[in-house]
Image (cartoon, rainbow, N blue to C red; front, side):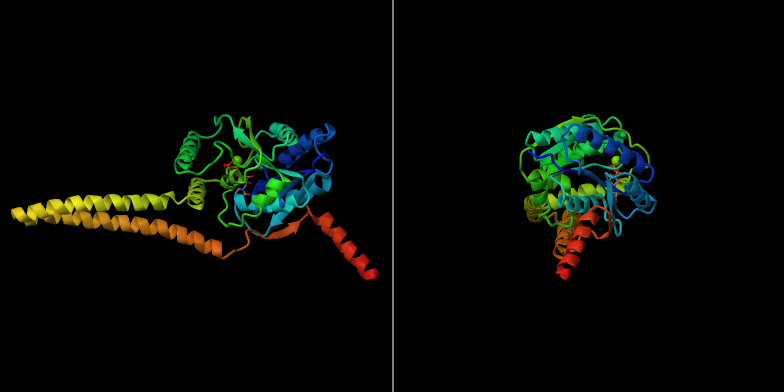
Length: 333
Ligand code: UDP
Ligand code: MG
């Protein structure tokens, strides 16, 4: 087997505090892997600037002049972690044999990148980085995340528990992933759907190196809700189930009301009538809300909007440079 070209894809949103450190640590890892003949010298780090408002892109550009491993693309605006990641993966896929995605904040243990690559050599197409402990996360984040994985499993969405977006993918697995054109991206749910030989590598998740989490509670909830409604019709089923229950319940209540009627106690029915009107009305509203959620999804999917736009590219620039030269040569002939 030829030594694989590895690209490490790093989405960055306002990461000026950590960027330089991340670049230098990842370069160290690449250097070691290259000198141990595990990966090709052509391997790169691809920073994706997700419309940052700070100096992130400036730093990426500067680093790329000093450090031959460092490349970058700048997205035209902030499109969110998942879309930024797919932008990077798609760009990287054109000139890599395998890719590793990792967050910019050094929370994931970069020392297991070597293990990832070794697993790739063993023939695995997908290697999931799985957090062994969540001690550095806040209690709140830990319990909500755990509850989320349990809930997802219950409603039939296969996720790798405690795996975020730190993983290695081979070119062929990545090419399959890129065929999924959905707008509401939830990569953690999509990757396990691909199949291919896959394995897990365990590591300890650390504290953010610097800067703040870009996932406040509101974004986290939206992300979880997206994950559920993008992969499962369980919420709709639940509403149907509630509907059934209420039908059965109202049949019983109806029988009761009839008996009361025969016995001549009609005015006592007023309370139960009011209660059931509210009850059924509430159910309907809830159902409509959830159905509306799915219709909203259909709406955004059918629009087939592009998921991102690349404003600047210092990753593929060499390649396109050659193309341009070729075009000039062809004209000459
Ligand atoms: N990120 C991004 N776009 C966003 C939000 C976050 O590219 O809109 C990046 C961010 O720079 C980081 C990664 O996604 O590299 C994960 O974000 P963060 O560390 O804030 O999330 P947490 O680890 O707290 O879940
Ligand atoms: Mg983080």
